Image (cartoon, rainbow, N blue to C red; front, side, top):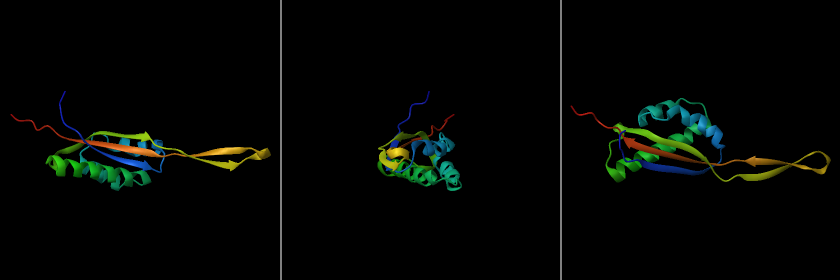
Length: 119
């Protein structure tokens, strides 16, 4: 098992269901940063734009704060957690109301440097 240091970035309070974001997140888990961004640029989902922003932020944190090279980075951890839910209501039959839940998400991206094999 390889030991590596992770650098994180968190996009908070995204007005999107975490379930919808996870569809996009599963496409790039474990991929290199540049490969992941290339995949997401061609993905026709709204969540792809937010995930690209989070990946770019994590890669920038790694290069600026820790001096890692962007070409060696890969996505070691990525997840979409549940954020705050806005509760709205819609009128229903016979004087009742039906709840409308507008869900939110927090997207966490962790990047790490690949180990280079030295002979």
